[in-house]
Amino acid sequence: MGNRVKITINGSVHEAEVEPRLLLVHFLREVVGLTGTHIGCDTTNCGACTVLLDGRAVKSCTMFAVQADGRTVMTVEGLAQNGQLHPIQEGFHQKHGLQCGFCTPGMMITAFALLQRVPNPTEEQIRWGISGNLCRCTGYVNIVAAIKDAADKMRGTPAPAGERS
Amino acid sequence: MIPGSFEYFSPQTLPEAVTLLQRYGEDAKVLAGGHSLIPLMKLRLAAPRYLVDLSRIDGLTYIRESEGFLRVGALTRHGDIETSDVIRSGYPLLADAARVIADPLVRNMGTVGGSLAHADPAGDWGAALLAAGAHVVATGPRGGRTIPLDEFFVGTFTTALQPDEILTEIGIPQSQKNSGGAYLKLERKVGDFAIAAVGVGLLLSSTGACEQVGIGLCNVGPTSLRAGQAEQVLRGKKPDDATIARAAETAATESDPADDLRGPADYKRDMVRVLTARALRLAVGRAKGGA
Image 1 (cartoon, each protein chain N blue to C red):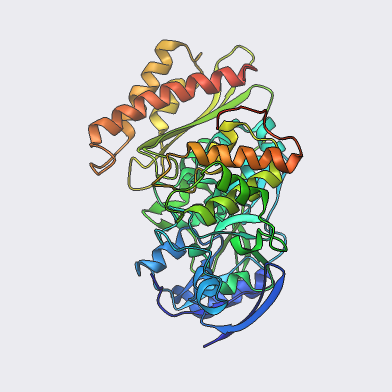
Image 2: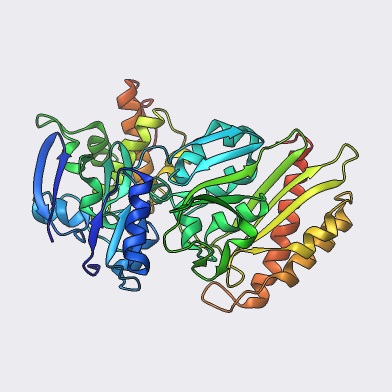
């Protein structure tokens, strides 16, 4: 009954025999051991399980691991490089873009995909971009500020001094 | 939530996929983006024994104009339609609809063909594409056949597709200089299904009368609905305020909503009236060259 899959995750190739009904999020967390990707609602609503699939942000609770065979996945663990936090992670840290932190991995991956496509987003574009990711703590204000901060850093233009976040 | 067990196939060609459907018939389900089917499987409301994944078949993702039609490949994702220049510049009805389907992450996976084949009355494409006068192409063992969308939705979650047929393309009459459209959706929050939504597609004559008009209603009946009598009110007439008001009232009477957590039926019917009038005004403005 097993199907063999080969998925490139954060730059490393992972091969395994899986049941077709195994969801990608369970593959990531339980087979590969990358528990940064969270299971929130498990019903395609909340976005806590967001990963990049071939560069597009998708909900990993709503696809089977076999669908990702031969494809490239990036999880929250793929953001930091050589022990250096990614500007998006720095932004969430400095602008206090989280409280309980449960939605944060999905939120940051969605932000990453958004900033690849729109390097200098308006507040509306940020809010529209994260509208598939639910946060029950922050009220989103600091998440938006964190993403804006990351966008500025990634473009190499820091936010004006004294600007209220 | 863990779906029931199934056997998974990922054919590389369309004939291969059709052969699998012929072999397994009603026990098989076609998997496209999976954003309707997989949630149903996780809830065990669907438990297909065989899944035929179309995602490795080349040539089912495209948006192009040819021979008088806009042709959209069945595996084209909602997000591709949302960001397409062809759609943005010539098909406001489709552009409006694409950006209000679920949320951005779902739009990265969900496909237009999958949404239609799922035939959920709450699916936005059903109403939008009925308004656009669309047809679909179904490919089966005997090749392809064209099905007008008017004949496609047989019942809730039921279409005119045979068990061994795959929806492969959606065709929409190509936009013209005086054509316009709009899709307006009332929803409780981003990502929810519509309380009610209305799509309008129209073509104005040189005198400003409605030469062609389509009105589609979402989530206010057992299937996606076409408001044929409301269209009749407009056909051949100038869409002035009085005519639009009459058409909107007619569309409301053609809707058949149910009481549920999104609101009572009377409220939804009245929202059909409001949204129809607004969508008509917006579509007329666009047909006349406005934004």
